[in-house]
Length: 143
Length: 288
Image (cartoon, rainbow over all chains, first blue to last red; front, side):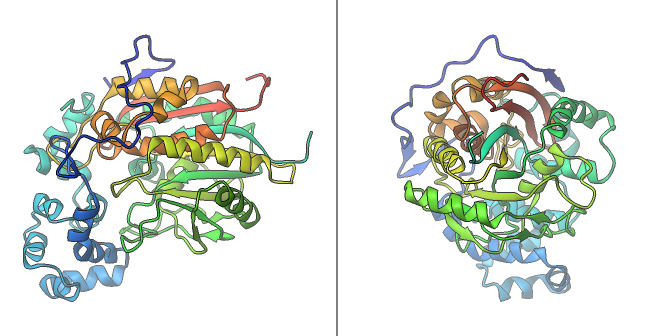
């Protein structure tokens, strides 16, 4: 399936009865949990702030060049934790997310390496880029 | 006609960066893109005949205009110009965005008076979240976009995002604010983002066409039901990035209860995302 013309639904899945309680979440220990889904919440963002600030700096061509010339030194300049620096040096994309990276920030490093969002999707799901892209082209993953 | 501003249409559209890249690189006729762009054509043709005096674009930034130092839940641009951001590979070769500070400041005051305390952006570089929807509307802008733009920003990246209910209420207040602007101008509103997608985690690549089609229908017929969905439900059903769909509710809230559907289209995949477009005429009693 690649596309469907509208108008669409004849059968509409029922909405879950959350009307009137828009703040409700099924949280565990105060954190929202959805299987296989990193939630970029406040604690995650606190943990990842230095990492994300470094990744944000790649908006400037000068900074991209300085990083490429001395990756570890550039990480130190931004005060990354040792395990965050290691994840960056190793291009361990899953670890960067686990250590507080926001996907939109982590993607800036991937772009510098010439990597696509489909490549990252493959890494996160244990597939090759081609396999991941093929799943999307066949309508996406239903997880 | 009364001498106040009037919302004439609302356009809901995904803002996937690869849609802009496909246009910028002349790939809109490529096999995996053609159906998406063919699906835009009827909306573009209608919009070309209904150019508003100002457009309000409800969008989110993606680590380009805003850092994580400050995460405003809602914001509004009040500048007379917004430069196109360098997102890491040079800015898109599209026109910079002309603002409408007088309308921005009017909307800000009205919304604050209604209890929506928006953060003010006097300087703002705009990224694909704003420019791709403008390209969906106007593929060949030439030297300038069709009209000045008021950007409204929503935090959809860092949890807790505003609730769907709050977004819908903001839209309703926005509609009242526009109707209180004492000039006879026409306004188009763009609600951007979505549809279902998830970029990271073991569930990356998640697409939920049943949910998306339900959303495409109810955004017209029953937006209050969509506004009742919790954050958790949105993340489960639409994916961690699909929660962007809450921005459609701001657009919808600013429109009449009854709107006429001009066109809609659904396509999978644009990059890692289900892409939807839906165009509604807000003029009461107007022929489509």
